[in-house]
Image (cartoon, rainbow, N blue to C red; front, side, top):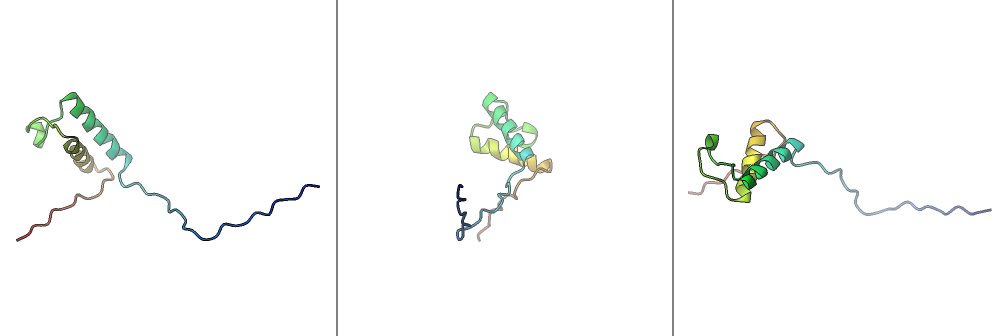
Length: 85
């Protein structure tokens, strides 16, 4: 007759909290689209694309996130710059 192994409950340690997404899927898609446009060279900055061509990766991401925000996707608030006097 085979003996059953005694299973011990693990105690101590911390439980991992269910990770909550900071950005929604729609926001990711919007950034992805902006990055593809940037790579192609058709992404423009400013209102209605009247500015110059976007050259930096960070700017492309910011444009994608702001568009996602405007469309109501789950995106954290922009950090407002504090004005010093």
